[in-house]
Amino acid sequence: MALSGTTSGMIRQLARYEVRPESLPRCLAAIQEFVAYVRAHEPGTLRYEVWQEPDHPTRFAHLFVFRDAAADRAHSESAEVKQFAGILYPECLAPVEFTDYTQIAANVELPARASMTIAAGMLPEFDQEMKTTRRVLERVPGDRGQWRPHPKSFPLGHLAQLVSWMPGWIANTLRKTSLDIGAAPKYSFEATDTLLRGFDDNVTAARKGFETTADADWMVTWSLMHTGRTLFSAPRGVVVRQHISHLIHHRAQLGVYLRLLDVPVPAMYGPTADERTFELPSS
Image (cartoon, rainbow, N blue to C red; front, side):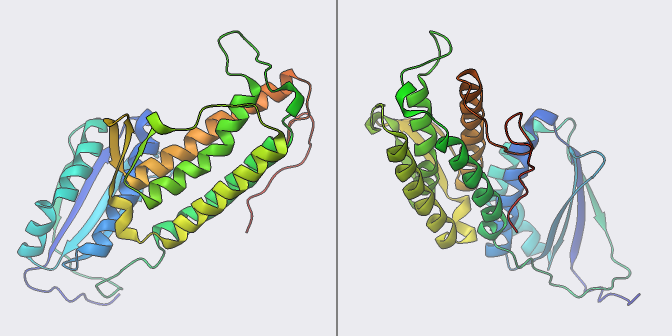
């Protein structure tokens, strides 16, 4: 174990907290985006790590090391910290506990920086979910577009069309700073091949967005609007996560529609009654 360079003036802190279980996905997304911002914009923050307890995934610890008091102050007073705290603090079961430490030994040299970009971390998940979604869309019977399981339910053709559009929402979020749904296209009944072509085009555009979006840009605020009125705003990274979760939700609905129509349901995260295979993530 090597003695550390206990640099005079360097500030080391640990923050501990626990969030509500139902808010865990939102908090995880906010943590990712915030740490990416710190990495890209705070040279005085020499180390910023976030740890999650494996047996208690709602419990977290943040380790941060600042070069000096000025770096600590610049971090604490930044608008991004206030935005992150505005997302995280309301979801905590108790106030965040901050503790100062003096380092006496270490086996690593500072600064330490993560090398994986946000996009690189999210793309494998995106690719796998889009692959699975396409397999579900392929099964949609084009001649049953107007069928619905209940008078209050979406018609099958409109639900499938929505799913085919949703990767385009991700592309929009990564290219622009808002989307006005008042100008969105109206639903129609289309052939399955048409829906698949649109889906493929939207997936290609979304993937290009991932590949060309720098880490700092994931913190840019994006807004959903309706005829000029803002419905909600959040960092791009949070919104993209919501889009993926939203798509998975409607894909699951499509699976129920297929089952009710006696159409074989493809394997997704595991086998179905129609496909006894286990769909593993692509390497």
